[in-house]
Every structure is written in structure tokens, then in C-alpha cells.
Length: 165
Image (tube, rainbow, N blue to C red; front, side, top):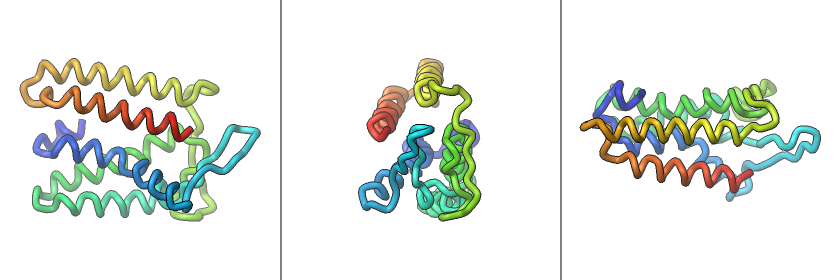
């Protein structure tokens, strides 16, 4: 949808923007700043105040968008929306570990729309949606050129998420 709104936006930048928070999370885990908090009654909660709080998402989204300032405001807004969309969608599938700002007392997260099969169902839906998109885009002159690369990159992100737990 974002690519349709501003077709001149680089596809790789949209993918990177949508995955930016998880990339930052991985870096912060490696640095020992973020990670998992064991909670044996409900699996685990993530300690993600810097990579996934709403305030930091807005800041990271703005910084990411600024990298594309030469392409104009429209492209910048679309890329900012790609980063922000990650936070919005994560609120739907995370346990209550999504903060408004780092170390905020308010934590959002609606756990899962799918109950105990959380993660697997969302991943399956993402795979199906990406596959449908890829095959439909393949028929289009404008958006079908990189469908194999998009699917491959999504598979890498899903694999990283699976390995992270």
C-alpha cells in the first residue's frame, strides 16, 4: 500500500523501514541493553524500551526518513509510515511490553489475536499475504520486478524472529 501511495519510494527502503525496529532490537540485544524478561506464567515478555517504545519509534522513523530528504516530502512521509506501521502492528501481537516512551509505566500489547498459537498463526498469515502479493505483483509491469527478493528478505526476517524466540 505504501509503495502504491508513492511509487518512486525505493522498495528496499520500505522493507528496511518496516523492519527497522527489529534490526535495532537485535543490535541492542547484542549490546546487552534489551532482551527477554522471563515470566514463566505467560511464556516471556520482551524488554524493549528503546527499540519499540512509541516515542523512540517516532524518533527512529523521522531519522530514517531524513536519510531520503533528497527524494522529497512524499517519500519521507511514506518511509516514516513504514517504520511507524511496525509499532502499530506489534501492539496487536505483543504481550503488554510496548511502552509509550522508554521506561514508561504504561505498557501496551494485546498479546495475540490467535491465542495459544500466537506467532505461528501470524507468521502463516504473513507468508500467505506476501506470497499472494508476490504473485499478483509479478503480473504488473511496475511492481513485479523484485518479488523474489521481497519474498527472500521476508523469509530472512521470519527466520530471525523464529531464532530469537
